Every structure is written in structure tokens, then in C-alpha cells.
Figure (spheres, helix red, strand yellow):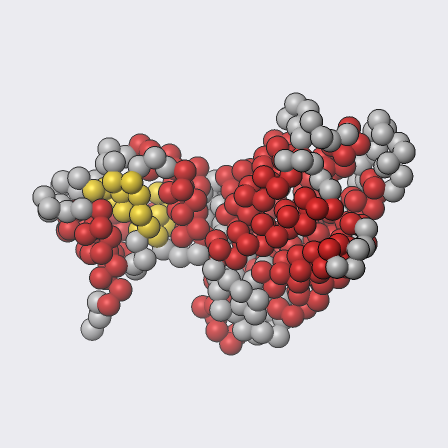
Length: 234
Length: 126
């Protein structure tokens, strides 16, 4: 098994932090979705990530691939909306890229596969006012930061989060052409896309967890890091 | 015999559409409704669709879907099924009606039932 105990702790903390953030943002996401969708994005994602957390906590000595796959499967099973197959199906497919653990290289492969599967499943492209508008710039920025700019993964992830944030802002003025919001036509203009927004929250929590756990992780191998009890940041 | 699986965000709508289609398709066609999210609200659920699919007698199934997540969740269920299953790109009510009529024919195939469902896209209401 390629992971150290510290890496496993970090991954489990990431799932917990994401689940807590989604729970804290549940009403916010549902408000965004009630403007241009069917008002269930917050409740659906919360149900999915609660189930995901429960399932990964029940795993016995999981590796990175198993943790990611378990999260994906739980989301597909429990979300009950388009976010289930979009988030969950993409994570399930991308989890195979983590067979050798989480490194700069495997995390780029994970991100790229996630984006590819997301676009295939939702048949959405940049500009359709969907989560793809946040995921695409984040993944491209992450890959470029690591492969061309030679940045450490933490800095690359921070840049990816910034890119996702700009992607979320980009969804506000445009007209939706996929999903339930597309039925509204021009009336979708001026509203922020809930799926892009929840994607940003997930990425922010991955970054926060990575910052917490990667600092000095190399020289403290068998510590049991404290999982931060994060509240909503707004 | 080709079966029909009707997947809607509403369990009631799935049942109602199946009832209407069954009237047209006669008693022979196997038409199964499934709908609702895991909490019983409006939505669709991959495990529920998988369970409904596997419980069907038919080895070949055409899936009728309403919109959005029903399409994606049905596609996920189809990918994991060992049956011969296709999702029809058709309006759910008119497609289910057309498909039920075709499915009750002795010459029906998976393709012919799917095509019948998809022909409903061009039906004018007035």
C-alpha cells in the first residue's frame, strides 16, 4: 500500500471537511438553485456527502483509490439529482488514477479524468452555465502549474481554487444552456450557478485540508492530525 | 418480449404514465414505473432504477426518462446492468405510449421499440 498513515488521515480529513462545508452551505446552495433550478442542490449534495463520510469512516485501512471510489459510489447512490452522476460518476472513474497514491502526477491525472468524465456525462462545455465552468479552469490551471510552471502541488491547488472562483463569477452574467436552468432561457442571466459554486466549496476545502496536512507532513509520519471543525466562511 | 421502464422525477408521474401506456399496449407489455429521490421527494435514484431494472422479467428493456438527472441516473443504471438496455431519446408519455404499442407486437425488437418511442418526438399535439 503506497500511502503513509499521514496521507490516509489527510484524505479522510478532506472528506470530512468537504462534508461539513456542504452541510454549512446547504441553505446557500439551495437558495442559488431555487433561483434557476429545482431548489434541491444543497439538500441533495448534503445527503450525498454525509453518506460518503459515513462510508469512508467505516473502511478498514483504505488506500487513496478506495477512499475516492467509496465517495463517488456514495454520491451516485444518495444524491438523487443530476449532481449524483456528475460528481459521483466522475470521481468513481477518476479514482483509478490514484492506484499509486496521491502525488503531483497522479493528482493531475485524477483531475483530468474527472473533467473528461464530467463533460461526457453532462454533455456540457464551458459557457453552458454549469459546474463545468468551475471545473475546467481549475483543472487546466492545476495541470499547467504543475507540469509547465513546476509549482509544488499546494501552490498549484491554490491557483486552481482561484481559477474556479473566477469560473463561478463567470456563470453569473451568462445564459444557461444545460440543465434545468436552460428552461429559463434569458431569465437565468444574473444568477450564479449552484453546481459551479458547490465545486468551488469542495476545492476550497481540499486546499484547506492540504494546507493543514502537507505542512511538515514529510517529517511527521505517524501523527494523528487534528481535524479542524470548520464553519462556513461567509 | 421487450420491457419498458418509465423513469420520472415523480413516482406518481411514473406510475400514471405507465398506467396510460399499459392501456394502449394491452396486458402483454411489461411496463414498470420508478421515480423519486432516496428520501421519497422529487428526483431520481440510481439504486432504485437498478433494482427496478433487475426485477423485470424482460431481458431486453427500453428506458423512458423525463429530464436532467433522470437521463444521467438511468444511463448509470444501464451501464451496470447485465440486461440488454437502451435509453430512448423521447418525450416520456408519448414515447411510452408508442413503445408500449410496438412492444406488444410479436415482431418487436429492442431497436424497433426504441425507434417507436423516439418517433414520438415528431408528433404534433394539435
